[in-house]
Image: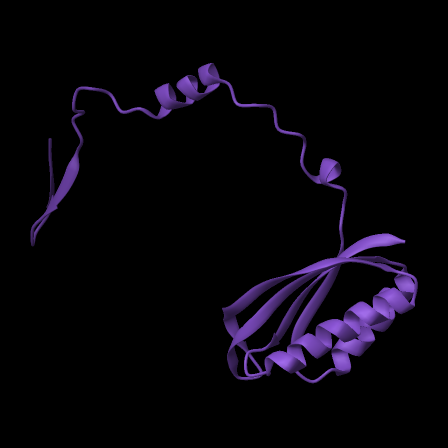
Length: 141
């Protein structure tokens, strides 16, 4: 079994009962085929970057589960034919240690060095700016 996650976009006009029904169907399908349901995160109603089926908004859900490839294929097939599902994308999750190295505790000297690099000098710098008129560009200090 492999760990997967699915980003699921449901129609914003869909009733909450229908949304819960779709999520329950997905969960039952994973569990019936021997998979393990890890959980789901409801991201809520969000505006789409572009309209899908003339709809500007959708409900976003992030689903986490473990299953085999055949179960994922069946799950994808079911989502494609389900009314109310605008888009979905399934990806295989990598272990956290493989995607991001463990962070070391921050130290005060490192923070001070970062602040020193980004700090502005105490005295004002001379900056050239452009002043435009109708005939030419004059630079002033």
